Image 1 (cartoon, chains in turn brown, red):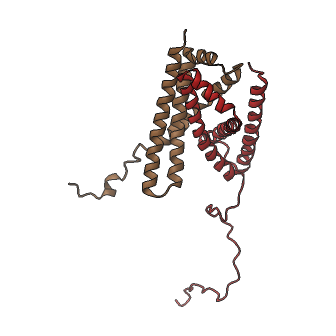
Image 2 (image 1 turned 90 degrees about the vertical axis):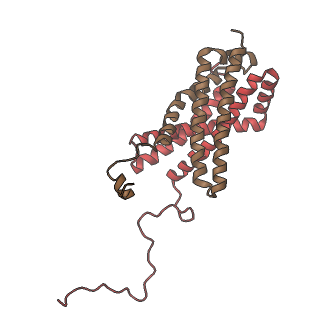
Length: 128
Length: 146
């Protein structure tokens, strides 16, 4: 057992080296979302009609499928981090806050799985 | 040694003190609303709205994966009047969150903190988001990009 005080042990060690993941993840996903969302918006505008077969064939193109999965991942991650902060700021009761955060996180994981799997299913169904 | 100054006692009756000129923490009841805090709040609101929009996007992709009937149902919901209102709302939220997000990234890199610059970039964000929303829907409804 060390006789040093807790303060004495940590003095001079600098920061923990962690703790910036949330902030960095929010910025990184934001930067990724700029081209991904703009590409998706322009692609939607370029459809003459949102016909079932036309959209299916478009999603099934390998490049589009990859970009769509990236879009889903970046969007869900960014949304998960962002809404988490909102709940942490405004929901004060400990139990409600924890429950809301758990539900929010699970919902975002479910949305990511649904989005990625949907793109995969659409892409594999389409006749190439 | 008797020259040690004593603390001056307060006058018994004080005139009503003017409000302090130092900045106060933003209690909403006394906070003077300005562009910066309005746009900051709007950034959060549009972010939450877009989180729900992500849910709609997931639902739309899932419907497309489920087959023609589900896809037709999803498009029927989106092309109904409430659906169109939501889509236009999400479009503005998207362009606003995008433009203001770029403004935030600029701040993160250390640019644009001066009061007047921050005010003007805020106004520019609102103008750009509104303009982009209009352009998007003009293009969508006239089919000029098809």
